[in-house]
Length: 433
Ligand code: NAD
Image (cartoon, rainbow, N blue to C red; front, side):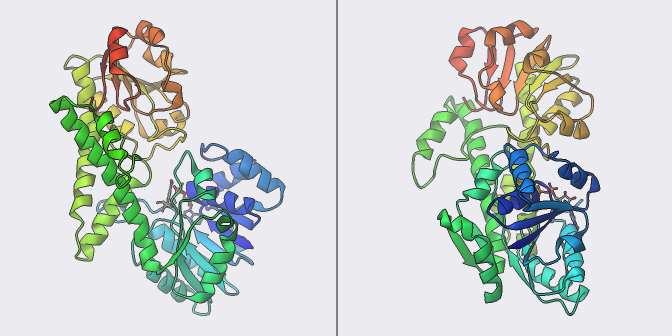
């Protein structure tokens, strides 16, 4: 099957490479010429485990190619995916759909025969109707169906998630599109991944409901962690105690510095706005977003307290910058708010992240980047573990202690054992324990 992917970022590139690996013929389109040039040269624009080999093998097999020319890319395609960004609109928190509509117009203008246009970008309920309208306006002769197929992959585990999804959600309003979508995903239901056909608006809402629910779970356990701290309880045991209940489940119950990343912050906000506009406000999600926002900077206060009440003129070593391990994505990473709050309080910051330095340098000012974790700790007054990369899970505590000017460690991911840290003479604080 011929497939075009408009937008070759995290979602477009991973989805395109995986569809090619299933045997489809895929052209990935992006309007960023630098990105396409790098991809043609075999250089990945993002860090995602396994992606470089997957892309290379499918390019070699002749099933995957890259172009900046949208009209050329969609020629002969039976399905054209829209996988462009839908960031928060500046000022009001609504999803900015300008990239989606611009792509839709361009697709419409280049169409020659019937095509299924599939929105993979996360878009508010009702966007499919507007995509349909915009396309008809741009080309009244165009023959097409508009489908919603939200993506649930996680950065850092994106290929596995795409190839073995918990479910595939397809929202459509006509039978002709259904046949194309069934053929496209046929390799996946051979793996017995459940394929759900629902109405288009329902599919659009499933994506936001999923992200808002997960964000709520994280925020819930974070508030329980705060309560544990004042009540003298252990949040990890509470999480295990509730997570073993099948009705609750153990995932997304790790207390930490608050959720970040390219999806949860913007998607919770966009859902809140949509719900308000439609007159069915989601007060739980409104609260989740507000609580999470405050939490990130509150983590800086934890560091300041651990440093004896002030970090003015002190050096803070930060381990981990990306919003989670195994990605170089810095979008809305909690590390940004934490570091800025520490700098506002007078600290200097030295950081180490296995993959994130390049992206971090674009959003953070006055941070020195170290070559390894111990170099970041050298001479620092306090260390703070922000992202739980594997590289930080078994640090040599003798070296940590020797490197730090004072042995103070704030562990925002609860990686280490408080009793063990006490035994080693490290002044240790974590979250909810
Ligand atoms: P991204 O910013 O990494 O990639 C978007 C790409 O689209 C960019 O490379 C940009 O240059 C390109 N683009 C924009 N307009 C274009 C146009 N008219 N023609 C060609 N290319 C164009 O974004 P992303 O993280 O891949 O997210 C894409 C969408 O998928 C968003 O709606 C996001 O919410 C959703 N999503 C993301 C994830 C994730 O983990 N990143 C997971 C699920 C869903």
